[in-house]
Length: 439
Image (cartoon, rainbow, N blue to C red):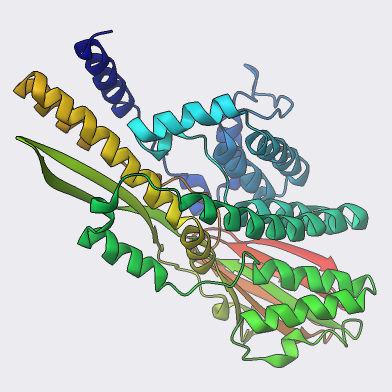
């Protein structure tokens, strides 16, 4: 097999792969609170709507984890909890499929990642996204008084947190293998970016304090006070406690509401890119590196503008999706950097071979290398920016008012007993989703 043939194949792979778009269109329905329409559109795109407009059974669709996630959450916020849970169940199946992916498939993805970029790898949901799947399923079941299924989903969320810690400990060990990239690792820009990542404020592990807080309330409501107290103490150690009474569950049966809010839009991933001219012998090549970074989105929702009986709620910060995303990205940063460097080196070898054959082919190889170098910016876009909580006494006359667009959503809370009032509002223009669960 001639060098020209090998070079031609490599360049063709780079060119064809570089033409494939990995971007996603924004879901405007979610942003303005048209959750039902957005969910139906998502189902249509997944092929789960027939020609008559009727919904078909949900089946796990390989390679569509993010699409399933979007549809599941839109259905949840539209109030169609059954359809929401069906999509979340499909996602659980896809999680297992990803986790048990064969060696041949993984090897093929690794080669594609090396020659093109990490977008050639199948999307692997982050620990944060996996935990939220179980959390939202737990909320679905709890709101329908299905206590047994609620307990199962909270337990799964806890188990996913434990697995994530073990998984990334192993991945960090794997990273330590040499990839013959000492020169690139000494690059000043890469070091600056790595230092910035290392300086991020992150959580000690993958525990989402909002999920753990809600789980603690659930356990306490089921008289599992020992485990509830242990979990709540862990939450208190993760947040800056401003209102200690909120974390006190001793009066859980004495007529109190815990108002838990998810507000704003969670962060996206952006790209930091470096194109480094490099002389190898008599040839100049360009080594291109693209690395992801967390980019927060501006939140237009302030839960402190919510009122109960005309009085503004005083909220306690409970969790930040940006901090969770940085926790996850920091844990897998070594692997991302290693693959980016290995890809740059591999493309550099192709460029050098091309330049020796012909100056024009060499230029084309350098151009294709630059075009196909891209960071993996895939992330679930339906997460909130922040979680907050407050605790209020049930005085019997409880009118909750949540502003959105040019109006407000009015919710009458139960006049007796204790409960959780769960609210999710992505933007100030979107109608909030409200679920009330008795404790």
